[in-house]
Image (cartoon, rainbow, N blue to C red; front, side, top):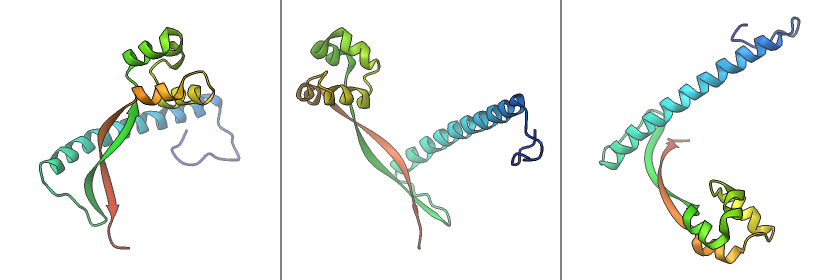
Amino acid sequence: MTDGPLDPETPPTLSELLERYATLRDTLLGLEAEKAELGEVIKAALLRGEKAETDLYRSSVKVQRRLEYPPERFREVFGDAATLEVASIDKKKAEALARAGDLDAEKLREIATVKEIQALVLTAKGG
């Protein structure tokens, strides 16, 4: 199968589609890993006070906040069954259970913690 668009005259076999899908998935995974690695190197340099920009972009580091629910505290407050229900204490799942009335929303808010992460931000120049 080629790397170009699919030929409407000759439909690809399911195996060919799977091969192309796997190639794209593997390419994306590799690119995402490289992007993450480069982002960490660039963020570290920016945090040391260095500057980085291209003809098109300026870079900066911004702090982002994300709510998380510590598994141990979640289990203490809501019990084993609820903890298993949300498994990794997925924020969206926990909040959906609270909206549905399966969890006490106020208690959920009380045990929430805020995690700060540093995100690399590209800002377009000019324009």
